[in-house]
Image (cartoon, rainbow, N blue to C red):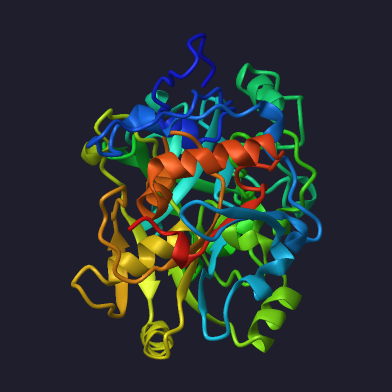
Length: 422
């Protein structure tokens, strides 16, 4: 998002963002809100971030990341994530998202030999997937795409932007991804069915043997897609999964959960701080940029969630004992609040397009653990709904001044219930 005008961001195209092209973050000074003005203007959600503050690798060990603790409307402290057991109370309940990131990025080619990049979003029907495809304009309905496993049959590492650019320009001797011959039986193929107006993507029909799902083949054919701002990482792909990831389906990690270790979860349990799980398969809804000045006009894309009866019971029991509900990540917030849209939390399995911004009436979530988010994003607006836009941007400025690490592999913020904006 390079721009010559400080504080102005041209809208990030959805396809560009979800194909993880390089996106920098020149952001504006913190805005203040005039008397009586609502926090619902897009330009209020800008801030300036030095490029070196974008984390390229995760903290090691995971729980050694820094933690900005917001414990009142006016006070905060600097801690380390492993301090979490002493920052919460016995009887509190942490709710975590157990989704697992799938190797959703595929590289292939057309019958003509032209290279194609595919980012799977979700399965719509049996073997039919919604995907972002590049170059999409050249892939009309009926076009065929052919994929092969990397050489040696092992999952490949992340393809660099330079390597991919070279391949697209015709230099197919660059890198390790072979150009499959059309119809190669060892490969994988798909047919473009139609365009999807909501995402700018394509519906792809994959040709699979009976009894085989695409998910089963992705470990061989795909790679885990890292976000666009992670351009120089040495991280193992398992470091982009939470230690409790179980159910495959996300195209990005619920990053607030990346800070947990098995040992930390055990320490929390020993202190009387329990854990419960929901599932939200992170998709285009989380990453689609807000590009309308009146943020209330923004439309979220649907994402699949599952809030089971067991989790509802755990939350109810915690509330009855005066314990607090602490969401680990914005995806957990959206899942729980969607499941309570009737006014009472209930088991829910289906799609959500809930968009939370200042003025939202909270039903379940009382506190939040979250990473530091991109400017002008729906995630910034969700956190602002909890503590206010001006307060949030002040905390971001403090984090920048204190050399916190930002975004997916970065540090975290703990917003305790007593810090919420009333």
